[in-house]
Structures are given as C-alpha cells and as structure tokens.
Length: 139
Length: 384
Image (cartoon, rainbow over the protein chains, first blue to last red):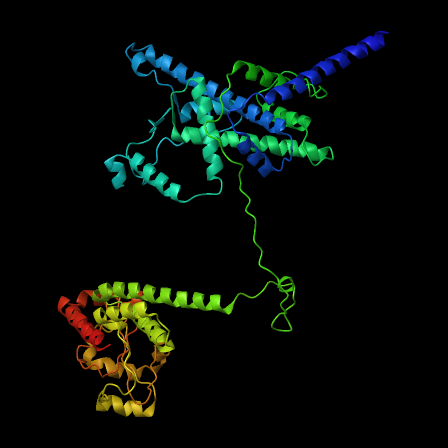
C-alpha cells in the first residue's frame, strides 16, 4: 500500500506537470509573442531544428522574449541606479535626466551576468598620436 | 522611441557613422531583412519595459544576442533530438535546450540531473512571465521568408524531341540556345564596347595633356579592330557614330592603304649604315645619362653596350618604313627625349624606367626642357 501510495504521488505529480505543460502549450496559441513566428522559424531552420508544430516555435519565441526582457530589465536597473547616484548631487538633474536610454555600458554589464561578454569602444581615433600632448606627438 | 546619437561617442564620428550607415544600407546582406525585423521586435520589448530611447549600437547588440539565443536553442534542441534517435524535435528537446542556456543564470532544480522535464522550472518561469507581461504583437505582418522561387529548367533534347546536332552530345543534356539570340548578344556586346570606348576616349582626350600614351595606343587598336570587322551598325548608331567622328578625330574612320600619299622617311646616314647590318634599329636611353648630356653621346652609348639591349623593347622594320614610336611617360617625369632629335621620322625608343630613374637627374631637369618635351608630344599626337 505504502509503495503504491508513494508511487501514486509522483505519478500524480508527473501527471500534473504534464497537464500543466499541455495546457500551457494550448494557451500558447492564444498568446502572440512579440517576436514574430516567421523570424523564429527562419532561425530555427537555419540551425537545423525541424518541427512542424507551431506551438514549439511559439515556445521558443516566448522564451527568447523572456530572455531579452530579463536582460533589458537588468540594464534598466543599472540605468536607474546610475541616475539616482547622479541625482543625489543635484536635484535639478532629476527632471532633465528622466529619459531612460539603453546604453552600451548598461547593456554590457547586464549581459555579463548572462555569460555574454560585450566590450564596446568608447571612441575611435584616426591615428595613434591623436589626443596626445604636442610634446609627445613630436617625439 | 527615439534614437539617440550615442552620448559616449565622439562628436565628429557622428557624420562618419551616418555616411557609413548610408553606404551599408546600399549593400544588402543576406540576413539584413531578418536582422531588421529582430531589431524592431527587440525595440518593442524594450519599450514595453520602460525604455524611452536607445543607442543604435546597443540595440544592434541586443538584437544580435537575441538572434543567437534562438539559434542556440534550435541547435541544442536538434542535438538532443538526434541523440534520442529522432529527426524531428520534441517539446522535451526544446525544454532541454532552454535549460542548457538558462543554466548560466541558474534555475531551481537545475542541479537535479534526473528531474522531470515537464515540471522544469524553466517552463514554470515562462508560464509566469506570460501571465505577468501584457501581450504585444509585432507591429508589421511579415510574409514567410526566405521566399523560394520555382526554377524554370531549360528543356533537354529528349523532351523537345530534337536530336542533338553532333554525335558526341547525349540527348539528356539541355538544348543549345537559338543562334539568333546569340547574335543579338554579340551585337549588344559590341555596341556596349563601342560606347564604352567612346567614354574612354573622351577621358583620354582630357588626359592628353598628361600624355598617357599607352592607353591611347590600346584604344586605337580597339577602334581599328572594331571598324575592320565591318560591324553591321544600325542607322541610328551610324548617325551617332558619324556625329561622334566629326567631333572626335580619334573616332574617324581609319585611312585605307593608298588613300593618302605619305612621304617615306629618310634615315640619317649614320643610323642608316647601322640599320643595314641588322633589322633592329633603336636608340637606348641610358639610366644614368641625363637628358641634357645625352644629345651627343646617345648613339655611341647605344651601340657600345649591346648587352643592355636585351631588356629594351625593340621594333621590327616593316616594308622599310620606320615605325613611329610612342613615348611612355608618367604624369610628372618623362623619360626624356634627346633635344637634338626633332624630326618625327627618326626612330626613338622610350623605355619605361620608372623608379630606376636617378634622383639626381630630376634636379638637373629644367622647366624649359620639360615644356619642350611636352611640345614634342603634341606634335606626335597630331600625327595620329
């Protein structure tokens, strides 16, 4: 009995999980992800993933949207943190810097937590001696 | 959402970036369409979160990362499907792929290797995400891409019932194109060649002042060949050709043999004696002899060093008439002509020394001499 009951519980648990999954996949058809299906299908086909089921492409699209949303949220938090640090000095800037801009700096910090290392050049110079002191340039 | 110029970038680079982006827009890559769509989708996602504007490069980076995410999920899902001896992907393959990518951040139950996939934390996170975030559909409706065009294959011999013209050609090969279509192509090519040559010759006229003689020589030959072939030019083209010929002496019809009386040139006696011995007659320009000094010593120097003549371009006498030589000159320095030789009937050979020229010689050149040489070239051009 005990063994049966113990077996039943995991079975019920799995059944619940399966049910949840099937319900979820069914509900995916109602939800339209921001990333269009054609784009996801194109890139999945490029990587060799064959699947005639539309629900799977929707699943991948939703997962990608979630991933991008997570990265963007982290970048937004970095941006807000930087703005609040600046605002502490002068209250006037709070009204000017209300604009939240997605910058490379915030993005690279956010992506680093996800294992993507993006390093961005701040500026490009046209010659090695650009920006140096005139004395050093002559040398 | 507006597009910020990029506060971190240097001011003067903005112009360059805009020019570069314009150039990039002209060159269409294979993935440009899908990348553009990805950028729009990512921008929509960012806007829904609260971003009001973005840096262009930041958006490009994020959309590129998103695309890579999709490709990585597809690749991993395909791998797991193949591992399980299947061609087509399964929902569990996709979940495993998502788990692999999310393992960097970590999710609950990730350390448990034998956990059930349907109850995976990744799926639960996604379900919660859908519940929280409002639905934002993509702004544009895009067609299925890439578009596959149906190829229209050329018919083979067997299909049309024709037998191949030659025995060695099997009948399963495609048919030969009609000879009439080929003729049009050839005619079209020649016409294009003609117009191309006209353009080039007009440019050459402008460059005549710079005396680029090799180009002129080649164009002359091309025109010669074109007119010699007797191309059946349409009346429109003939009128155009005539108009062009009137304005441009180089486009005039070449003179046939015997049309115009030309006097035979007379060689100076000294050269004539040497020419009688060999059919090669030339004057060598020595590198180290400056143009001013050479007038007297040229001929002596030439005949005294026959070994140097091997590298020299030689002209073969035909019908006893000396060929007119063209001087090869660069825009700035000329190889240098002997001051003493003024007549056009004497043979001259100019060598293309280029960098071998001694720098000391250049300083010895006077502006007067260069002007004189340029004047000589004008005479030669007029004789063509």
